[in-house]
Image (tube, rainbow over all chains, first blue to last red):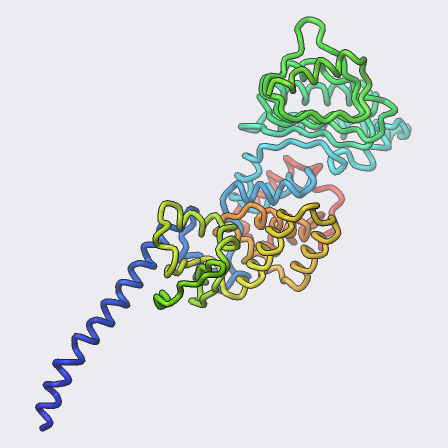
Length: 255
Length: 172
């Protein structure tokens, strides 16, 4: 009787077990296949899965694609962005390829602000002058060493009519235009002393978004306004004549 | 694993997502489609809809409810006319981040990157950036768990090159 039962079990159970195994195998294979399909990102996912368990010990963030790390940088002030270059070799690379250049309040700090306003005296003034010139030089080097610049921003509360400062901004703006940037924002909150916009900005083939505040805008004399890529134009407390506005909006109507 | 064939539901179609640790989540189709990774899974493969389980290898089940909640709310915000007041969106976003530790935030950034959703990724990366704002290099390294692989000389050189950027920092 016992051998018979064994035989019966052999006869019935084995196909059943095999069926189950086959089913399991198929589902696993299907999920395996589907996860291969659903993985648009370059990270080794199994690798990451193991690492997520000990996030505090492992540097997860640095493995993210460069674009994601650039997004993190975009929410920081420029001075801090520069500081991320010292975090690790990976972050230095991320900084070097960061396609945005900004002159904001973090760059022109309070001491410089006092100096530019002309409120420094004697030795302090000389010291600040040296410091400031060094900074201009350094910032220009940063700008010129970018492999690509997409966006150029100046965001300051005031424009200072100091020759060195003006020529520094001018040189940066012109360099940015020559680098085929897509977005430019020149924003001086206090419009009492407007920044004289280098006319070359209005001849940029690549600019798509142009935002100006607290600027004095004149049309280029030698050539006409040419902004064939312009999609968005923001003008806010601009110092200019009427025909300048109509000339600028003419380029927008093309799209 | 795949559910039985009895699920010929007439209501909103559901999609089953499987988190990294194997836990399953039944999600309404429009919410699931907020994730580009899930969407790309079904593109040109419409027949497979019903019974398929979508594995999300880089998303732990711990974060799934919050992530799904974000999608549900933000897609509703986008659809609403007139658009919701900024305070309402802000209140939701703040509540979302309220009890999240730095580690949890980091894991969610990894998840959002894997799910390939720009809105969630932007939101979380901004939150991370806010937590390291004006902090020292050492703080940021510890925050992200970045290992400093520079030699002391290399690091000193980069610091010297960018001297102005290291001025007046509080080391916390």
